[in-house]
Image (tube, rainbow, N blue to C red; front, top):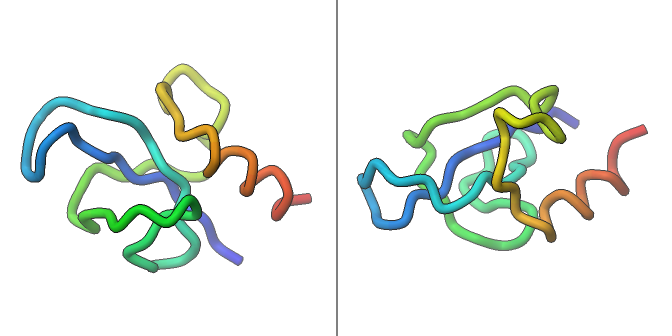
Length: 69
């Protein structure tokens, strides 16, 4: 399954990052269950665990670790 990282902003359409979340495919819901704006900034799943994808949702990170080899 394809994963990618998407930004959650502090307010809709805002410019301040709250945290990054992992998403399966093109679902509008993150792995932790948050509804996200699909037009928000995205990163490749390869950015997981790097400084580029911090702060990262703890729940999404834990679930992602259990899904990828």
